[in-house]
Amino acid sequence: MTLNERTQKAVDLKNSGKYNCSQAVSIALADQTGLSEEQLFQATAGFCAGMGNMEATCGALIGAGMVAGLSTQGKGTLGVARQIQEEFGKRCGSIKCKDLKTVTDGKPLCPCPECVRNAVQIYGEVMGL
Image (tube, rainbow, N blue to C red; front, top):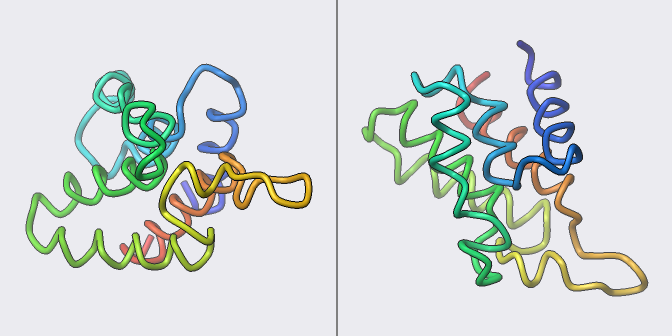
């Protein structure tokens, strides 16, 4: 699956209304983890609306970080997660769900589908997919 196909899959999952941002990202990258889509769906269920509905770290970013940990088997994960986080902040304008959803001029800073798209895209760029 190409990176563009992965990003589109993540957006489609999110837009279906059946997946939160973290689930959409992790499932689009499932082949990087050694876990099934169902296992990832369950493991990331609590990371919506900014880390358990607390409007904190964006769930899409959490999903990408979790996949990074699984794909690196914990070796060098901090550096990878930092790269993903920094680039996500640059592209989206923040890493906090509350800030990303803040409406200015009639639209949010970065809508959830764009956060999902960016998280998968950045993961792919950092990991060389």
